[in-house]
Length: 117
Image 1 (cartoon, rainbow, N blue to C red):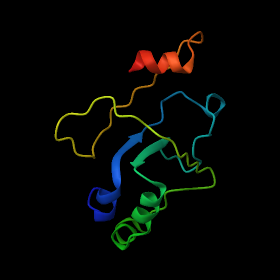
Image 2 (image 1 turned 135 degrees about the horizontal axis):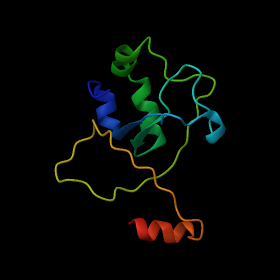
Image 3 (image 1 turned 180 degrees about the vertical axis):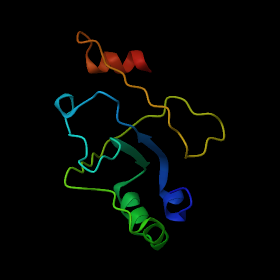
């Protein structure tokens, strides 16, 4: 993806998340892919239009075909995120560090967010 100009122009961050060994469909909101793909990826962009631009651009289509990114279990979430820390001069690509956090049941979402930040 980092060799496709359309991706580098529109993606702010890309993070591939991996399935955790021993976690089955009974523990997940969305089932694991029957195609045995890893669990999910974050594609950070400024707008939904940026996503459409990136995946329809000729350089991306030519580079990625015939690869298929989805199946009948494909789920797309449009969300917002916040960068908590970023090294000066940071450039998107290659981030593979993933943290799983769970709030204590007695904390409100707002309090959890305040403490995390």
